[in-house]
Image (tube, rainbow, N blue to C red):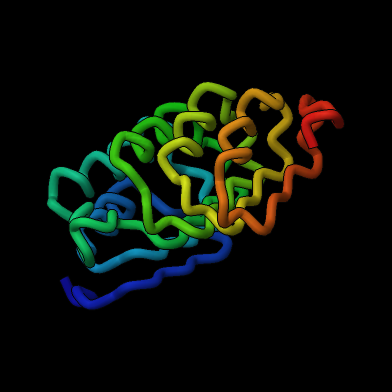
Length: 164
């Protein structure tokens, strides 16, 4: 309620981020950049509900309905951010998303990551480091991203060198 004009939110060491707080973030209609690092508590289903709540509250249209909601997202070290969350995020196009950091979200799989990347074709920076179970199949959408200038897939041990 008090931060209706908030556009960017960064919380480092968000170990104690609880579900009610995450759901309150969903109502911040102008929020277009969210960086939550090392949030250990929200489950994959909680993350999915966050994106669904944002859509149902009409926040996907803010700040620019025709352009999509998010400009930058970082869930670095949020180990429970996984398939359901990625698919919920990918359920609406993400044409403004230029910066995405999913490093150390080690439960992401190829199908959900691929869906998310296909919905975010304007990415310029993508950090997927330390995702041990993804393969080259998940990275295939990156080949169609004309503005991608940075790709970090270090410690993605299942991605074979010939993909890169």
